Amino acid sequence: MIHQLISQIKKLEAPVVVGLDPMLGFIPESIQKRSFAEYGETLTGAADAIWEFNRQIVDAICDLIPAVKPQIAMYEQFGVEGVKIYQRTVDYCHEKGLLVIGDVKRGDIGSTSAAYAAGHLGHVKVGSQSFSAFREDFATVNPYFGTDGIRPFVDVCKEEKKGLFILVKTSNPSSGEFQDRLIDGRPLYEWVGEKVAAWGEDHMGDTYSYIGAVVGATYPEMGKVLRKIMPKTYILVPGYGAQGASAKELKPYFNEDGLGAIVNSSRGIIAAYKQEKYRKFGPEHFAEASRQAVLDMLTDIRSIF
Amino acid sequence: MIHQLISQIKKLEAPVVVGLDPMLGFIPESIQKRSFAEYGETLTGAADAIWEFNRQIVDAICDLIPAVKPQIAMYEQFGVEGVKIYQRTVDYCHEKGLLVIGDVKRGDIGSTSAAYAAGHLGHVKVGSQSFSAFREDFATVNPYFGTDGIRPFVDVCKEEKKGLFILVKTSNPSSGEFQDRLIDGRPLYEWVGEKVAAWGEDHMGDTYSYIGAVVGATYPEMGKVLRKIMPKTYILVPGYGAQGASAKELKPYFNEDGLGAIVNSSRGIIAAYKQEKYRKFGPEHFAEASRQAVLDMLTDIRSIF
Image (tube, rainbow over all chains, first blue to last red; front, top):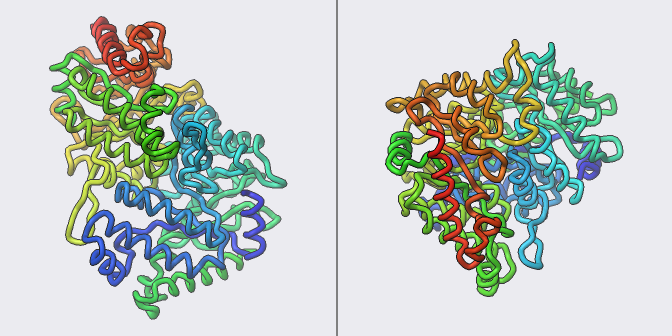
């Protein structure tokens, strides 16, 4: 999958992933009304509105980018009906030729991580049969448990030729509370970054590992250091756009080959029609606004090379 | 909920929670066969077998303990069908008078944590309606993001009078890789413990906070220190039984009032019939074996006071 991701990034000149993190507030009223008319103001109705919103956005942008990153929390909040739509979104994105990074941030003790890995990236055995449940290509993972919480994910990735992005330095304001604390003179995120690089050695592609890292765009100085600590690690970079980082701050996340990072924007793309800049599209053309926002993001990101 | 948890623990003399973490390998063949006969060797068949297994265990033990802790990974691995059964298990346990600790280990940036909190502990708005999706009473949460990743969970807990157990020191062998690293002379888990105590100040019950901590039974010396750092924090203690810790190692996790900790056993209870000690029950009486294992665990735990 890391090969496929890199070859699509090169082909499209697009080191970009769009976060499919739909909140009901992002969804134009006309879509909500239609779904509520069919399913009522219910969890099913909400899930249907999300599905319709996602589908139109994916149709509008799928030729421009290599991958999407659905945030499972935004689906999980609607319970089983939401999870169904998460699944449906993953499958639909695959049909449209997109790679899918499941933003699930799972992580637990070994036997439990093994179950998460099987469910999201691998297979689960049922009697004599074997099934792949959620079918993402990559998943985000939390490192707090250490190696034996990560190992089962890496093992499944090796078997299935899939990949991970492990949290190293997150994009949120209080990420430094624990992640920046100094241990033997170096911040925790550097120690985590070193581990991610080591875990990644065990599942290498040609030049980059299948095991990537998450480093927020909001901390470019740290990004620079982490780039050096993890030279063969693909970095998933959240925090561009709505969270505040601009393109020029992203340069340190890339290697000299122009690869090594993929920048995420969620709200900035999927709710573009709500921004002043794209208001002319109007709510009924929200998907076209999203397409324009992707094109603008690509121009912006390409300007740094 | 912390009041209810404490009053049930007192009434039943049972500072014990049973982890409902069913692997298919734990489920007697007769149950699997019946489910596969009805639904085939499918994800639905697997989910049905898990449901039947859970139901019989819950029926057999619900009068002995205050709470259960379903591990969502064990359901999620079967995809949407598994998640349905997770939901059904939560609801059934409530019907049987049990409190439910959703072992979900979620945690993300603020807006995403808010969605997880709404879905698992709170309500989500759909048009003019409001729904509670997964309906657990407590959830486990990962602290790696710091305060703004935790805050939305605490906010929802305050509104709904629900609670959390935040990971501090986990029970797995490699938990020390990051958690034990020294920061200004003290291990990371102590810093996290201090934060948990501080976050908990904001949502107090009478003597204990609604915001609890997870500290593995496998590290009793650390448990002792953390007990002091977090005097008003309820500690959820995994790692008893199958993971290796015995009752006498659990004493430091309790306060002098005999409260302040709740000990989890999963496999040791739900797969009891597979142990030499309970083999006489046979697979067809697995639920009675689980009941006996709970009774034995209660005797063991009570012996430390």
